[in-house]
Image (cartoon, rainbow, N blue to C red):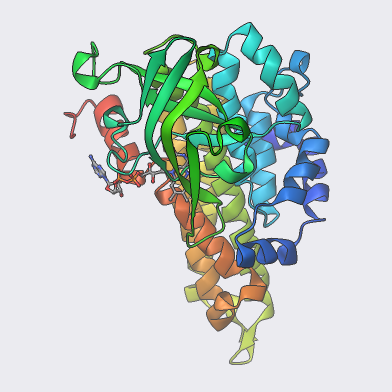
Length: 389
Ligand SMILES: Cc1cc2nc3c(=O)[nH]c(=O)nc-3n(C[C@H](O)[C@H](O)[C@H](O)COP(=O)(O)OP(=O)(O)OC[C@H]3O[C@@H](n4cnc5c(N)ncnc54)[C@H](O)[C@@H]3O)c2cc1C
C-alpha cells in the first residue's frame, strides 16, 4: 500500500465531508465569481462553519488540531471537486506563523476568532514591486515610535487584502546595510486592516487572468501597535521561512487535486466523444498525454505525502516540500494541457470550466514561489552546486 493510499484512508471521512460540502458549490457558482472577480464569501462561510478552515488551529483555541496531512487532504479535495481553495490555504498557512511565533496574548486574542470565522487572517504582505523574489531587498519599513511602529512602503500581489480582517506583514525594522546579515532586520506584524483602512493603509485591486482577489497595498505612516509585533524584532525572515514548507505542501496538495479534476474530465470526455465512428480515447495520441499526466500526478502525490510526513515528525522537509510543489505544479499543468487538448474546441467554452481551471492552475508555476527558484534551491542545498544568485 502506498503512502498516498494510506493517507487517503486516514482522511476518508474528512474527504467525504469536504466533497459533500463542495457539491453545493458547483461550476456555475465558480463561473459566476470568476466572471465578477468576486470573493467566494458563501463558500468560505460554509467551510468555516464546518470547521475545515480551522483545521490546523489547536483544539484549545477552537480549531480541530489536525496535522498538516489533514489540511492537505482538505485542500486537495476542494480542488478535485472543481473549486478554488486559495482563501483556505492562505488562512491555514498564515495562521501557522501566529501559532508558532505569536505570544500567548496574541494567540488568545486572535486564534479563537479566526477559528470561529469572526476574523479572517487571509492576507500575507511579503512581495514588493521592486524586490520581487529577492525578499531580503524589500523596502517597506517599520520604525518604532513610542508604543507603535510607523509603517511606510508598498506591497504588491497581496491577495484577499480587501476580504481579510488581518494581514501578516513583513517589513524592515533595521536598514539592510546595518543588519548583521542579508536576511536580518526584517520583522513580522499583525495588521488589523479594518482599523488601518483610511488611516495610512490604502488597497488597490489588481485584475488578473483568474479570480484571485489580489491587490497592491500602500502604507503611509500607518501606526501599528508595538504589541502586534510577532516574536522578536529582526527575526521576521526566519518566521516567514519556517512557514514556507507547510505552505508548499498545501499548495502541492491543491495542484494534485487540480490534476485529478483535469484527468477525470479528460478521461470521461475521451470515452464519450465519438469522432470517425469511435471514441477519441481509443487513439493513443489522445490517451498518452492523459496517462502521462496521471503518472506525474501520482508521483507528486507520493512526494506530498512524504513531505507532510517529515513535517509532522519535525524533520527537515525543505527538499521534499519544494519537490512536492515543483512536481505537483508540473503535474497539474500537464493535466490541464491534456484536458484542453482532449476537449478540442469545447475546452475553450466557459461552461465546461476547463478554461477557468486552466487559468487558475497556471499560477502555481509562478506563485507562491516560481519553479526556477525551487530548482535553484535543489541545485544549491541538495546537490551542493554553487549559489546562482
Ligand atoms: C495571483 C498572485 C497572487 C499572489 N499572492 C501573493 C500574496 O498573497 N502575498 C505575497 O506576498 N505575494 C503574493 N504573490 C507574489 C508571488 O509570490 C510572486 O509573484 C512570486 O514569488 C514571483 O515573484 P515576482 O513576481 O516578483 O517575480 P520576479 O522575482 O520578478 O521574477 C520574475 C521571473 O524571473 C525568474 N527569476 C528571478 N530570479 C531568478 C533567479 N535567480 N534564477 C532563475 N530565475 C529567476 C522567476 O522565476 C520569475 O519567473 C502573488 C502573485 C500572484 C501572481
